[in-house]
Length: 499
Image (cartoon, rainbow, N blue to C red; front, side, top):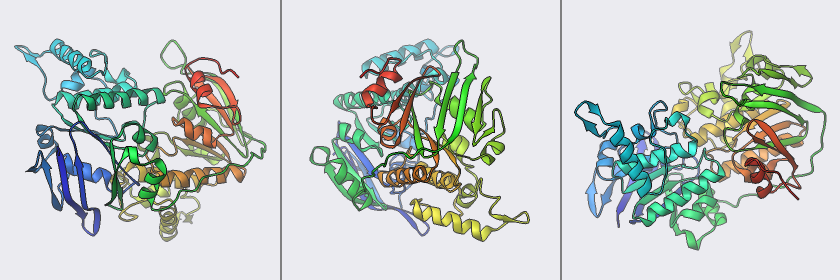
């Protein structure tokens, strides 16, 4: 056995994140680690990577006990970790990011040519092509993910931990990454894969270990199980299959006409986009990242001024209006980037939960703290947000638990119009079930929802109409009845839907 973690327990005061967890890894194996948000997956891997120390238990490499006081120790022992949020320098080139800390040098300093050559050799050897001279900030997210993996391979990693590696990738990039992981495993590299996407896990993993509430509920061979069994092991119950009734359409809540954002490039970022969303419907937007979806959402939410076009919300012209005014006109917004636009990391759970709600929680200008805490506590329970207390700072919550808090906060606005951008990014299957049910419930109560998701299955499952974006334009529109993954994928690539 290449790696053994035996009886690992990790406690933070009265909170136990891992309880007597045992986990092992074979050479050339892809071993997936799954569980609900807050189940202890990331904590266990942080211990393995030297970012935390266990309260009790032992780690063995090649049968010999080891102890890591830092990530540097783990790297020295051949363990690398690719984090959920990339740790790259956007202004550096691909090669500079890969060799950082172990830069090839010459008499007068850093040898950039040697770094580029080393990167090219490494990329060719492991079948992960990159341009060594390109700045990382100009690379797609899929290429940035490759750079992160090549970086740990350059450091000599034999064991690679991947934390939610496909969370921000397009379907095409996901396929490329999974193929690369399988090829690396064939070459003898060993992977620990943390993911909530059970379909991807079933495609790539050899074995799967499930954690629930910090304990192992079982380890199974991927060939001997299925998604339903894994879901039961993760949440401890059967998941409910959602049904979607026919839409009962009302008046137009949102109407956007001719929205254009020129940007600094030759082609506009947003090119004459027009759309509407009616009460009682979910309109889904699909498209490969970088085709104008982000700019559209930012214009609608007041985060970006359009160069041309108009936006009406609930009959009010809110073109170019402030975020405050647009929210006052009836907008709630689950943002695509929870850290950039969704929370204040330094604020606690209660403070983040009441953002946008302070008006109705105040009396004579004084915040009613008891009512605020009670309201947030109810959301925490309903959406299964795992947190030590309501006073825990947002930066200490897992990404999935933070997402659940934001979704709960925005749904509680009871606004006529909701932008739901990547609403289930990084959440577990149980939370996904709750969020999907809440979105459909809002729609059935005559709410108007604009759904943007990189998960085509989510768009197909929830949407009454689907708009596909390509190069800043609406490339096509499909009803729920006529939409298929194949038709949407064709439109996403700039083709035309047929049949």
